[in-house]
Length: 379
Ligand SMILES: Cc1cc2ncn([C@H]3O[C@H](COP(=O)(O)O)[C@@H](O)[C@H]3O)c2cc1C
Ligand SMILES: O=C(O)c1cccnc1
Image (cartoon, rainbow, N blue to C red; front, top):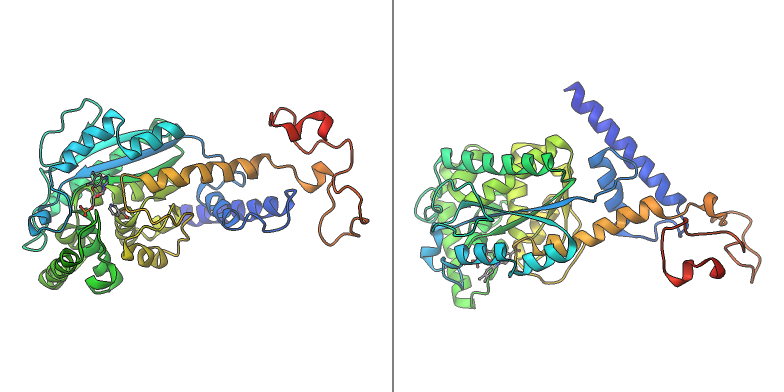
């Protein structure tokens, strides 16, 4: 207990020092907008006033869903296994983004229905998919626990390999239905508020998908006594595994960059198990699924991007990652007012026409950049 109080204080001190440094950088106060609150949050999580996140690992969990037999997705269930192979071969959107940004990608099979034929997949299959959550519990308690453990161990392995930030991703046809069931229950909302088109179901199928989620909620509600009942009955194997990642990140004070609706539903469940998990979450984007905005609001998270994405696979987290990395670089490398001898706001002011940067002062740090405006003759 004392340890956690001390940890929290260390985080608050780091956040305050990050705030002070942000105000001391050669820029108008507050001018980096949302990136400034992001940096304070990362400082608080990592307990470092000038955090450097340089080793991102995307942990992508794949599993199938029995609820697909209700016809809730625009695509057939076999796409899960096919896409896992595509991701590992480098052909999926997430593979391209991870490659382009140098993000280490780990793909974990926690419950794909068929054998996944690729040596790159981490084999942690708990069961060959869940059962239909609209007809009975999706999992047994032992399966839910094993899936959370698979997520926990994957996160521990990534951290042992040097990861300093974890990105979450998932692949599982039908998982917007399971995520909707979890979200509707945890947010105390009807299915109509959270269910969206997922892979792109038409309006008739969307109405059916909502009815399926409402039916599942009515079926399970009398049996939901603790968080484990909720995950066991309404969740999914990859949802449980992603929650396991959040739980490890909370205890290790490592930032988790969420992706879309599905990853955020898993994260909210993790927060019901350990409220400290809420402190390590970062929101990459807000997806087109209507429940995503509601989940982010519940978690008090401000998404960095609003692109209308509805893909998953960690794609939104991968797109937001460069912003996070660049924000950290800016905090670490931008000159301060005193270093650069730039006049602060509230001083005597600068005479009209006078240069705001005294001639002969280098604003850039030596060797920091090669662009033209940083050349000696231009300073
Ligand atoms: C080719 C393809 C690639 C994907 N990559 C992610 N998803 C996304 O769509 C699925 C969820 O939507 P629903 O609940 O409507 O099935 C998940 O696999 C999610 O990761 C994909 C879906 C498809 C079809
Ligand atoms: O928001 C998401 O995570 C999402 C939305 C649609 C399909 N797959 C994922």
